[in-house]
Length: 174
Length: 379
Image 1 (cartoon, rainbow over the protein chains, first blue to last red):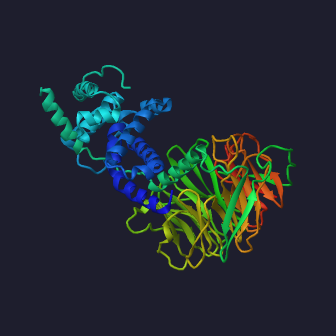
Image 2 (image 1 turned 90 degrees about the vertical axis):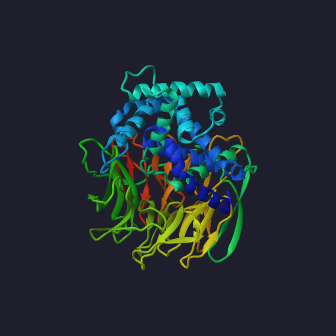
Image 3 (image 1 turned 45 degrees about the horizontal axis):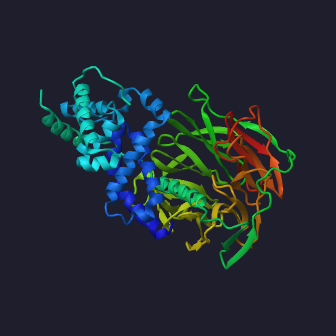
């Protein structure tokens, strides 16, 4: 890649990393895994950059790359071993020094609960409620129908309520 | 209990308010991974295929010259066994601070062969190591996951960890600043020369911490670059983009090397560069060959070994150390005066070097690591 294209790539990567990391953190429930997913997305983005830089909705395109990268990674056997081997407590963000309160506790519980929702349902929840995407846009990102997005949203929210209310978990987490 | 719609709104509000731990994404690393991937991608598509021959052009410091040559015949195909050279090996001791055998890595050796740098890692902890005359010292570096990466003949060590880069000199650590606008952890030294000039990265930018300006950092001309080494003369080598080789002379001027030649290592007058070569039918990996180039005389010669190899260090004498068969059962070896000297190993012959080997200026002292720990050779 020519140096000036690379410069553009770096500028864009700098600007989008924090946003991608937030989405990845909610998808993965783990800051280190989120770093890996973002890093992988940025490396893929480099290869496609000469074509990608002129795309109108580049942010949406890169976000789609990130979500697909997350879902691909979840399918790898080592990914399950590592994630399932981590006790929920260790996946909590570092809050040393932060005030302890109901709101903070709720957010912690939400991150932990979300990590236990099946991966595709989790992706739907994050795209719809964190990224505020429409049902149609989520369907395009996940390559499924709008009906599937609606049903996954419903199942995902129901799972979150169960998990947040402390009810026994139903079904697989994968 | 709230209804579904209310719960969805509550969920949205809480989700959007969740604080996220700081990202440790390294854009410089993503850039390098992307470059490697792009190169493989292009080679797979045959865009670099040049049947049977490759044109290599190298820019010398003073004069732009080009040379044309063919790939070294049989450079990577086994021909005959080579003799085990007259090298003596001994273990470099490693501290067992975890109660478990840690991973030991060797990263550099100074031109005199007296100092060796490296690290010892176990789980998510790492310590910077310095061997002096074969005795190990654990450097109590200021960060976590620290590693010492280079040392000069005065015993000044540079390294980095999660807290960023540092210099260890006379028992004291000094932090290396990152460029303005970069977090401190973005500072990563790569090499140090005998004058104490340090080169490395500040994120994706190539930088120098000049010896005569303590506490100062400046980007190399052109900025965006991956720096790989600095000679005692102050000549810096590195690359930009996809294998666009660069060389910076001590006055700071950037010299371009045509596509296809990527400077990797430098010591004294010698640069080891990688040359992309198309090989018919082998599209599942990056084709490559290596050239030893004297940047003052413009002399150059192919590096050859009977099996695949990767050069890992060069000494001022022009001796090069390599990893033979880098992808399986890799072994350290010395290429000297056209001879391939495989280095004898200690007890575990399966030990795979993670870093190194590295070589002293005269090409006679070599260090490397393996699964069993670090080793030192005198040839």
